[in-house]
Image 1: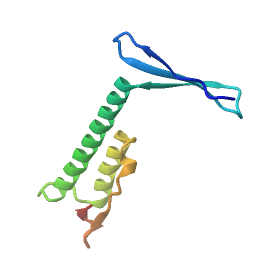
Image 2 (image 1 turned 90 degrees about the vertical axis):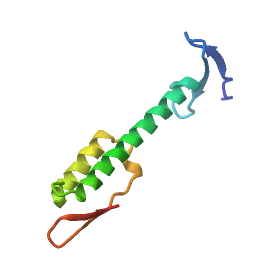
Image 3 (image 1 turned 180 degrees about the vertical axis):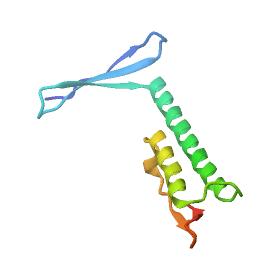
Length: 111
């Protein structure tokens, strides 16, 4: 089946949107591929904001390791990291967090 030609329309804010009908050979369903510059900008901004907030959360955890009354025990630090991962589930998969502990079970370094 030949590919369908894209159609360009405008939304209510007069921003261009490109639509293209897409068919899969093994399936009887038809899909609509939508391209929008405004939507792309919005998605990029959201991803950047989530990444920044995740990194700020990691930095707060790292900073608390050096404070006198900060959380340093491995289970508690792991719990904080777990909560942060749950909150930013779309972002955390791009990060690898390593914890090093001392002989007392306190986290001494986070990378």
